[in-house]
Image (cartoon, rainbow, N blue to C red):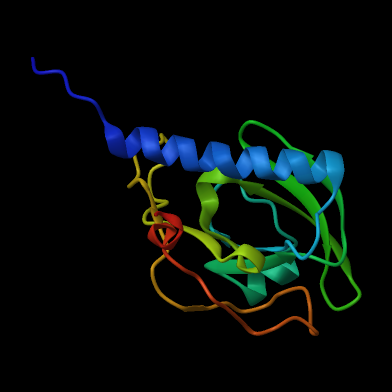
Amino acid sequence: MTRSIDYGKLMHRAMRGLIQEVLTDIRDNGLPGAHHFFITFDTTHTDAQVADWLRDRYPEEMTVVMQHWFDALDVTDDGFAVTLNFGDTPEHLYIPYDAIQTFVDPSVEFGLRFESQEDDSDEAAPAAPVEDDTDIEMADSEDAPRDADVVSLDSFRK
């Protein structure tokens, strides 16, 4: 039997860990400066918890914004819970890390796209840098911009 290093699986796990670390810092210290996040996730994921009316409106995927107002951010090893405002209606969500499809902080032109969410056993495709402009539907803020510029991580390399 030939043994090999599964770099894809390791990268996938590391990028989810990065998101967990960022959210833990935000929970403990708040959002610094102009930082804010667009997080797109699979609403069909078994462990995702979304209000029925939101799931009806976003039956496959949903993008949430953590920027001006969010509450009750709870970060765990498997995902995070947060209360967000949807048109003056606060709703509590639970988003497992493996349901996340994109994580973007446009204030510093940082973005990640996860190519596959089909396998909950961490054997999905590795996290990949986002390399194109992505139109992101805003679910919780009517004042926020409608698009996010998403760039490749290569642009930060020297």
